[in-house]
Length: 119
Length: 342
Image (cartoon, rainbow over all chains, first blue to last red; front, top):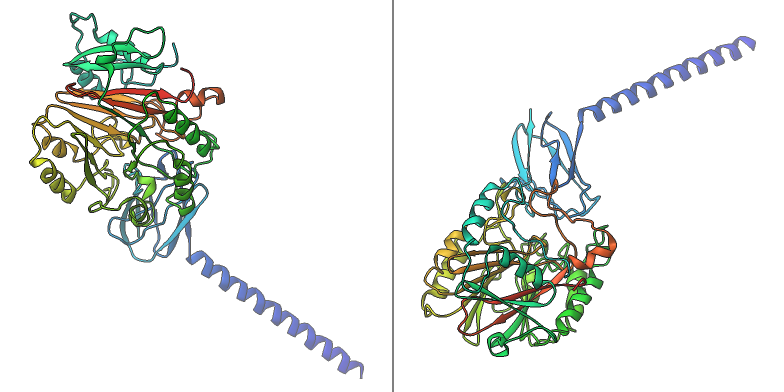
């Protein structure tokens, strides 16, 4: 009888260990996937994009945030991406899947330009 | 003497050499029989803020003080008609530079309604709204209902065509206009042209009129007599004030070339939220104050954004423009009036 209980406890313990191991492994897989979808941030302030030029890996999500007190837009002349008017604290995100060079500018204040290089 | 509107003063504003050179050529130093020299011109413009009338007659400036106490030659001052310009109301803006732009717009309207000669119509040179939102256009229309005038004409600013390439703007204000919203009309022998230079802007560029509009303009003025006075109004300045901040129009030279033959051309713009003037041959350029918030003088700040001034000073840097057309005179009589400080 005691042996049965002892064996059951051992089994339960082993199952518990296996289960925990499975959970930990699952979490690691999820984290690895998150790292693959890297993100980058560009600030819009004082009528400029900062940083003005960035280089990111393919698959990166780039987010522009407008901290200026006037609205701005983010427009790619090749029509690959275009935000609507962004007021203060509004954001716009775009995932760059393909390698290449992407110029963009603010269609409201066209002297504001930036560039994203995707490797 | 009240606070004077900001104006281009050759030598005062560093960093824009081109402007300095051209301003030096335009405002002549030489004294004329009336004793108005370059300093006199600037002094006259300062008086403009306090209700003086500056009239240019054949390149010579005469000033008349308006109101009791000032000598006024009524015959010389009497214009065939008066109209007004307001600009950059930015309805929807609510940041530090002016938390209540609707209130200052109403004060500007009160100013217009208090003019000694009611404007026969009003030109709004753009940036009606801050974000092209329906409720912003609605608020503007509501406010402008109380302007005592026959008609208001509009041209869009870049803030009015933010998300829809101007569809909403044209639905409201673009009846009988062509293309992106350009048009012309005649009033008592003066030919007015409203141009749109805020569409299809190119990266790194300035304002733009585009080929379609230029072709239309050339055709529109082709058959007019050379003696017809012309008034062009558009949002972004049609002369290059400060390219670093987008204060200019890529193809304005082309437009102005169609107007070379006319004896009197006046260009009225907005966009820069301060008064600037320039005379070049037969063309007089003028930009208006905003009714919402001021912006810095060229190069005087990191960017051309809304400029916060002390609360008690705000109304002295916002204003309206009263314009008198005086038949036979070479240029319009333009008076910029701040909301306060006269």
